[in-house]
Length: 91
Ligand code: SF4
Image (cartoon, rainbow, N blue to C red; front, side, top):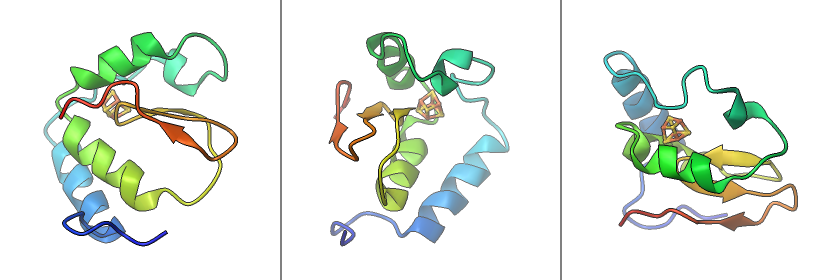
């Protein structure tokens, strides 16, 4: 999948997120619901939308998107089919 214009490379996105994690705790830290395969996703999207790392986390998720995965990351919901839906885009 080509990188959309104006989006960082994977390396740039990871570097920015790593820098941010050095000073900021993500809202999902210690929340087992983010690593669980069941349960409602809407509450997790709400948590993401309020996370101080939403921007860099979403950039990594978008840059690194390469295949099927399940979970909520960067305010987006990914399904095992590889399709991605966005229930909480804040912009
Ligand atoms: S935006 Fe990323 S770091 Fe923040 S709560 Fe969501 S998954 Fe965790």
